[in-house]
Length: 363
Image (cartoon, rainbow, N blue to C red; front, top):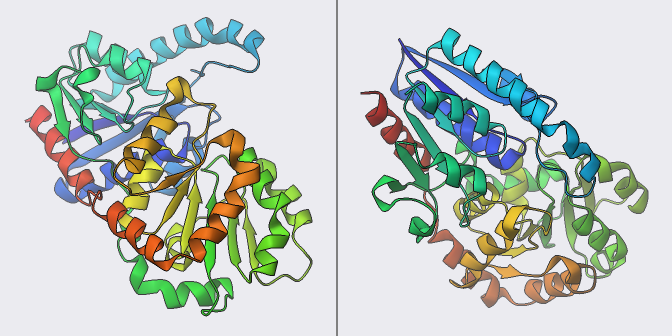
């Protein structure tokens, strides 16, 4: 029996690609045991078991930028996580450890490398984070989704695989009619999908809330994912009985939301961008400024340079986002061009490509 540990998490952008890799591994190897390792209290502790996999949480935590006093406990949490990671490796005896990003992956990969267990890193962003840059020195293989990653990693270790996405996103054009019925929308009116990421985005929520009347005036239908923190406030903003605005804290059947959309507004996480490339719809990206090394802006600009997306800076979104949405709705040629260009960047076989590299490690 083969045993693989997949470690990382924190956001849907880390979790869903990890689950895609696990699913592809199970298809390729019937006799395999997969264990996930994430961070206690984070969303992977809910989403991974829902996908049918076992997961263990470590007490590791990320750096607090807005509340520095909370960082005082980080060394102790890291020390405990390293010890727990060592115990997990000794007990589970994996053939390889796969890191999918996020601070939760650091203790597992660090200890695996100390124990001479082969490690593979899946770097999702166009700008590699510090953790992966450090861990890459002893990793056997580094799977990337963007070109020119030799800036961060040794060239001979890099494999251009793309980021894995959920398989149900491959047929969104075929289910549009069902998606419109599911949301109760009028097929003759345009639909805008607003995604703040799995944790929500205050800027996007406030930008939409302040300009919601413009969507009503223009007969624009809206699917609005707020995240848990912004959900109740958004519900209060929407007129009672409105059929044109559907508010969700989290969208589980994302394929239907993508299928209904004519325009998508989103943060610029690497996993999300990979999904958007598969979906092939016109996109307006509003990169989060609250991420390490401003990597979302770099992700967005990689698409903008290829005329595959539009972007608006976070601080300008409240004034400019709704204006840009309405402009794009009125420019079908521009929408078609954006959709075509972003589709050309899709890498539908990313999960299988990564599994090939994992199998090469353990064979």
